[in-house]
Length: 282
Image 1 (cartoon, rainbow, N blue to C red):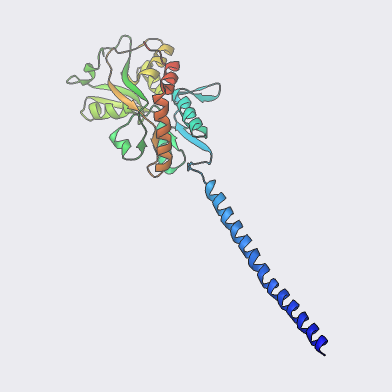
Image 2 (cartoon, helix red, strand yellow):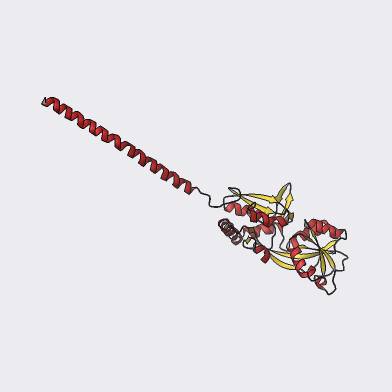
């Protein structure tokens, strides 16, 4: 009996130990799962995009490709100063650049709505525009000039402001040429402003006698005068202005990244080298 009792006691102890072992196993599996969840969360957080763009991995640039040499179409592609600056910024940020061509007066709305990340279109910083978008550092200086026919009675910018002046001035809609001539001349009763979708259309209107002059940026003005016989640019400039990129006010993170990249490209001479490729130093 004693031997039988001892055998039964030993068997009970073995079963008890086995039961305890069965309870410990699930606890080890739970710990493993918790560790996997933590590692998964860490990996996800580590791969979050640092730059929230309209299209992931792409910097979308809105422009009006009728403003040489800043943006124009060549061989079916949009090229020019702004296109190259956008590409350089995108490269610095590890993104690709995508350029969307649209009417000039649609660019700010595209930026505000998130359809574009940045507007680069030889755009001048003005107080009204600064209320709607954030502007990057200025990367170029523009000059508004006056195009006239070679036999025009308008010989200087002062003639536009003369007492009793009543000229018809062609401009590209919503550009600074439009804004400044409206404020300075039309609102003062010294001119009537005819607005066109493209600068080339305003120049054609001058050639056909529909307007007395065209106020536009100096660089496209030089290109238009070279193409259209019988036109010239007045020696006196209309106004100096600063060009910058327009960005959404609600996307501070992307704005900061783009602006830092642009400032670095300005500082290391990349931007000036791009400009010099298109504009001679004369």
